[in-house]
Image (cartoon, rainbow over all chains, first blue to last red; front, side, top):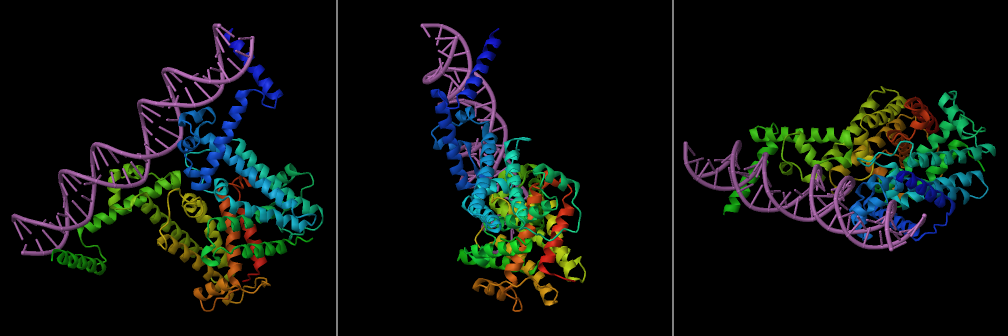
Length: 250
Length: 250
DNA sequence: GACTATATGCGAACACTGTTCACTTTGTCA
DNA sequence: TGACAAAGTGAACAGTGTTCGCATATAGTC
């Protein structure tokens, strides 16, 4: 009987939560504020010491809370990391989208704009970048089919769409691959868009890998001993070379 | 007087150490064995849990020694990491050299052999790879101009030499860069080899970044959702595309 | 061979980490 | 007002890297 009452109450609360997205009650507002504060502190700490150095007790200290209290908001360190990793994926995807848009109408400008934004965001947020593309944090396992892999796929699909856009405008003529598309490539193409040409899949993956490699090595300061801190010209030149080899016009 | 005696004794010892590289004394043999054992245990642990998860107390446990005892052999965790990172650089460089040699006489075969070896080593030793190209370990700072940066440069120079080899055989005709070589590029070229053409510097760097990106993303399983575990064909095809765009014949 | 300086190794301690648990205080809602 | 859930705390546990003082084993010198 008690549990039934409780259940119905919980259900009512859930409904009200879904209904009133304006966070009416005082508790909800406070909670949202606390969550935001925690995340902000965690992000600041990651920017300083990197993902693997994130300390729960540290963020508890900076926001003036006991370490145990954090567990009311996140499932420990792993839960917090899951959220931050998801955020990083989305932030990168947003930055790329903005970079594409800044390219105006010209397909090549849009494409290059996305790539440049990829690099810029990564250099400005190296530790968030490494949260995604660095060493997996020891002891942390992303939840299966959880928010991080969803964000990962979202980012990947968005990138493929940039290629499709140029393709459909007829300005994209990568050298034809002598090999026929594999089943997995056809499958992915269909999943992305009915119009997506399967032979574009490996081309886009290779392109991604290329400028991702450039970005990674720059974030890790692997070009410093050659170019010092003036790597931008090299990067731009390399992107031009890449675009030429893809025969992306416009 | 005492100190003078002591100094001369130390000097004699140093001389004898330099002279008898055969590790005559019992102590030296034992020490070498212990060092090797520690390194082996650390390497095994890194292979399991990754670099940032390396636990000094853990290796002490597996070799049956007290944690404090390790400090007679390494300057704490950082010292051990410095050695392991250096080893990783050298192991990768060795693997690449072997891959090049396996290509026989044909320049293109040699070049591709090196790249394939780069990928293979990285996939077989992902955690050593990430030790070098992953997130810097929190709290660890490589000693300035220490062994790790030396090993890093050694690896880089070796890679440039592979390019020079193909160049000198007249089989390497990358599309000419419209931009004149920068001072840093000329400087590096001279430092590498008097015969090294400066315009080859950015080409080789770009090439490295390209297949490094492919390798990184594969190590981090970022292709899995598309290709499953059959990524080798994609990689090989991509390398062919890269070689064609570089116009490396033979 | 005895003596002494050095290398090796250990246990205890310190400051730190993530996490759990029992407990109190605070807010919400019938 | 009363009941119940949420929020927050402090103590505790097991784990980490590191330092210090002390014991022992080895090496080289008189």
